[in-house]
Length: 331
Ligand code: PBG
Image 1 (cartoon, rainbow, N blue to C red):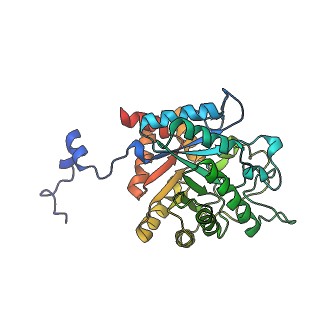
Image 2 (image 1 turned 135 degrees about the horizontal axis):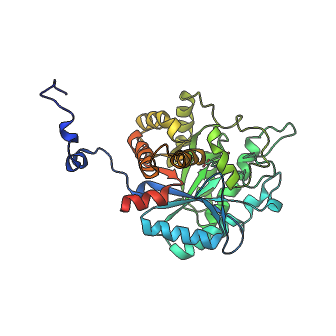
C-alpha cells in the first residue's frame, strides 16, 4: 500500500544511484539475448545490408566468428537466416530440404567450433527458398496452401535437426505445423530438440529490411496477410499461443516486439510459459535512424527498449543489437 504525501515520497528511493540499483525490479543481462545472423555463400565474405545499417550477411566462416564472439559476450543463443543463391530458389522451395544447404553447413560449422557452448536456433519457413518469396507453397490461384506447406516444413525441420539445430523456430504461421513437427522430431529420435513457436506473428510493415537481408524483397509479390495475423487482433493471439502449446511448443514468441508488448503481457499472464519477443529489423532500423538523426542517444535507446521487453514479461528477446547491448552491459 502507498501512504499519503509527505509520509510517502516516491522520489526518496530514486535519489541516488545505489538506491536506484537496489530498487530495480528487473535486470537486463546478455543472457537475455538471441542474436539473429544472416548467412551467405562464399568464403571471407561480408555483405553490409543497407536498410539494416551495422548488420551484414556473413559467409559461414564469418558466422562462426560471430558465434564465438557471442559466446565470449555471454549471449546464450544465435538465430540463423540464409540468403539462398537465386538459382537455388524455386516455386517449391526444395532447397530447404537439401542436407548441404547454407543453413546446414552453417549449423555444422558452428557446432564444430563451439560445441555445446551456445544454442543454435533455426528458422523454419520457406521464404528464403521460394522463387516467389512467400513462406509456403502456392496453389493455382496464388493462395499459400496450408497442409502441403506443413509437409515441407516438417522435412525442413528434420533437415535442420539432423544438422544439429537446438531450437526449431517455425515462423511460417501455417495451422498445425507445431504438432506435425513435434511428432516428426519424436519419431526421428530428437526428443530434446526444442520448438520455439512464432506463435503470434503479425503481418507487419516492420519486416522490410529482413526481406532485403534474405533476398526475398525483390521477388515477393503481394503480402502475407492470409497467414500472418492482423495487427488489430489480440484475442486471436491467445488462441494461436494456446494451440501451439497444446501441439508441443516449449516456448512461444511474439513478433514484432515493441508495438506488441501488450500481447507479450497478455500471453505471459494467461499461460505462464517462456515467452520471447522478436525486436524485428524495422524496429532496429528505426532506432538506428533516430540515433543518426540526433533524436536520441543510441546506447540509451537500445538498452531502454530491450529493458521494456523484460519488464513486459519476456524471458528473452531476439535482437540485432544483441552484441552491442551485451558489450554495453558487460561494461
Ligand atoms: C520469414 C521471417 C520474417 C522474419 C523472420 N522470419 C519475415 C517475414 O515474415 O516476411 C522477420 C524478421 C525481421 O524483420 O527482423 N518467415
